[in-house]
Length: 455
Image (cartoon, rainbow, N blue to C red):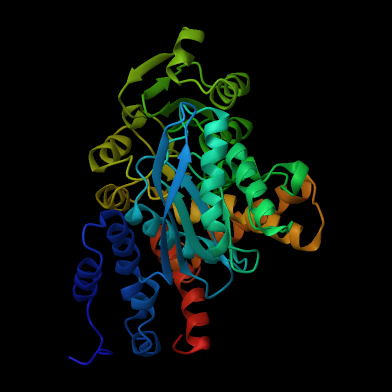
């Protein structure tokens, strides 16, 4: 067989598995995209001859490095750090940094691969990247987190830059960690430049960045519902997570007239039949961001609520579901429970929170399902706007950025409808949002790669 022959999907995935042994998360992400892309490119010889999908499924580079730091007991600790630079065909690499014990090369390669398509969907000039370390900031003092972040940036700084790779926050990396890393970058290079996003407002951050991912996921949900002739008002929602994305998603659902029943963390979920209103959301934000407590404390404070230890919220009857915690948190059995209990729409605030089997359940049931690369793109979209503000030395206000975020999410929804409709060019009938997001994200990256030749 010649190398440029048109191989089928099974042959393509066999090659991906052979080249990436044991990297289950990355293989899952490639499979999810490839099964839609193969149908789209079947009669487009230019993509086959240039081996575009094969090239996209191979990161430009994966940098791995040791991170040594000293804890408060003067013990030397050693972690591993990574930066995966997946694809920069349409702009500098852009994607978060994650600090969590589960971080490994497979997880970061999957996230960087997904980020490539997500960033493409925003319409902004950003490529895909992701990084992180198997460091757990939970239970660490501010001084320990600072020393780790400084050591991490001492290696990372040589691989990033405002025109090369612009990281942001992710799980375990919030304003505190971004501040420590930016300070170290500035100390090493002697330059103040927009090399990180998610910064505080005092030193180049953007209004709306904390809210953007959660709000954007709800805007995408609203767009899906409106396209189907419905709305959020009066509907019950279950949400997983209790961090930045989840609390702001809950906030926006409440603002739009919905009722939020659940939030969660790694210890379990809380169910509040009275609804988690804005006052309660503010209490949770203080619990998580200031006290760094556990969601179980909610049930102690609000006595009508119950805490379900070690469980996830997907068996609670609802109209809407927003998984906003982490990857593969919603499996096929839980997806079936959601469908059977009357859920009509799912919008992913997290990255790949639904397993492939769970996605199939949603697709077969023909419910509205917004995949993470489309639904949670609001966060990276406002990160891109922060890059623009840093480059131009300007600052936009909350109203301006809110309007831009709404327009960006409207645009992403329109692209998904264009490429994912099953029922005619007018967009009537069922919309496969996964297919739409994959094809729309792929096409822009692929066409840019064709323009560059073989590089």
